[in-house]
Length: 367
Ligand SMILES: *Cc1c(COP(=O)(O)O)cnc(C)c1O
Image 1 (spheres, protein in one colour):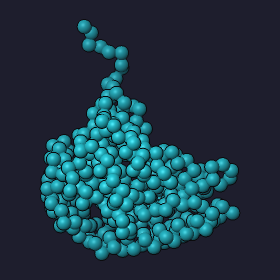
Image 2: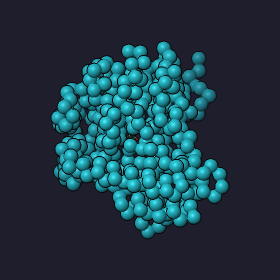
Image 3: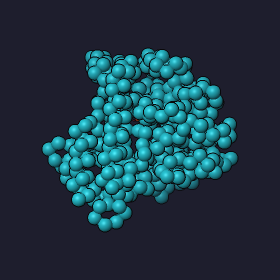
Image 4: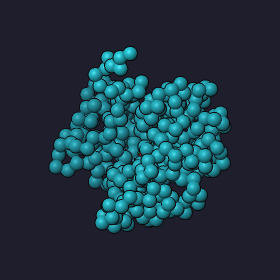
C-alpha cells in the first residue's frame, strides 16, 4: 500500500477550511486624530494600579507564571463571593469559549446560538466538527422560544451572550432561567457575560446564581471590556466543579501570563475605577442614543458599551457610505456584514471628544 496521498501538503480536519476567519475591528483611518470605536475597548484604558502591577513583572519575565492562577482566582472569588475552585482563568474569554467547545463538542453534535450572536461561537463550534444551529432573533433580541425550538437530542451546547454583541440587547434573568429550564440536563448552557458590568437593569443577572444552582451552566467574563485590559488577554469562567475539572485537564498548563494575572488582580481590586467607567457609559449610552435618533437614525436599545446604528439600505446614506465618510474624518466604527447586518454600523461608546466627533460627522453626512 502506498503511503502517498493526493494532497501536496498536510490538510486540517474536515470543516476547518469552511470556517470564515474572525475579522477584528479596523484600527487605521485617515486624519491626524483617530477615534477607534470599532472593538468595544474602554475609553478609560486600564486602571493605573493595573498598569503598575503589570510593569512590576517586567524583571521577572524568565519565570513561568503560576499555572493555577491562584491569586487571581482568589481575587475574583473575593469580589463576587464565589468559591475559587469553581473559577478557571484563560487568555481572554475567547480561549475559555474555545476550550468549552473543544471539550464538549464532537462531529455529529449540534450547538445553538442566536442569529446575531457573537461570531466566536460558530468558529468554536465548527472547529470541533459540530454543527452550528442558528436561532432567529426577534427585534434584534434573542428569542428563548426560537432557541428552544432548535434544541434536539444532538444539542450539546447553547451559547448566549447576555448582553449580546453586536446588538446590545439583553435577556432578563427570568428569560435566561426559562431557557435553562427548557434544556436537557446534558446540554451545557454557556452564558457569555462580557458586558455584565455595564448593565443597569434590575431584571438582569450575569448568571452567577444559575451556575451555582445547576450542573449544566457556565458563565464567562472578561477583563477586556470595562477593565480595559484587552491587550493582555484575560478572562475567567465560573463553572460547576465537574466542568472546571474538564477545563483544567485540557487548558495549557500556563495559559495565562504572569503580567496579565498581576494586572487582573490589581484591576479587580480597583472598583473605583470601574465605577467611573460605568457612570461615563451610563450617561453617554443615553445621550448618544438620543442624539443619533434625533438625526433620524434608528438605534437598537443597548445596555452595553456600544450601539448598533441602522442606515438606509439603498441611496446615498447607506452604512457603507457612512463608514467611508467617518473614515475620512478619522473615525472608525465596525462594519456589520459578517453578522448579516449590512445596513448597520456598531459604535463603541468613547470618551466625550470621540462621541461628539461621531455625532458631528454623522450630522454632516446626513445633510
Ligand atoms: C468582547 C467580547 C468577549 C471578550 O473576549 P475576550 O477574549 O475576553 O477579549 C466575549 N464575548 C463577547 C460577546 C464579546 O463581545
